[in-house]
Image (cartoon, rainbow, N blue to C red; front, top):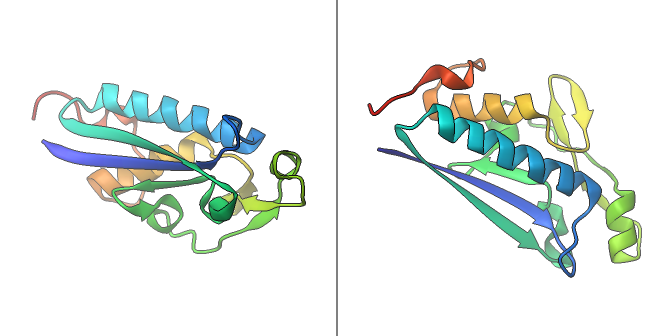
Amino acid sequence: MKKVIVEWSRYEKEGNTCCRCGDSTEVVRRVVDEFKAHNTDLDIELKEYSLDEDRIDLSNTVKVNGRDIMDILGERQRVLNTCPSCTDLIGKETECNTYVYKAKIYDSLPDEMLKEALYREVFGGNSAAPLRVRTGGR
């Protein structure tokens, strides 16, 4: 059975996270659950990491089998912008990671971006296919 590891990193302070990481957390969990349900022949594990302020530069990032989804999708540009939610949590102006996908910048992870990155990393190819691409006990 092929192993797939999805790693999700987000900033957290005293059990709270920022709005963009909160939204991205919901997307990661939902998409990984859907991918598991439609690809039962894969061993899919979601690892979630809570980061402190010293590692906030790694916050709001997703990796599949050790590869950042931005790299998987060929989005080499990393864009930071001011995160008012993190600024409130930390107490000083803070810039956080965004996602660049199909020439647009998103504060939180778009569903389709993670679906496409999972498909490319697990099955190869250059485009997203339906989550039902592979099913059964093969």
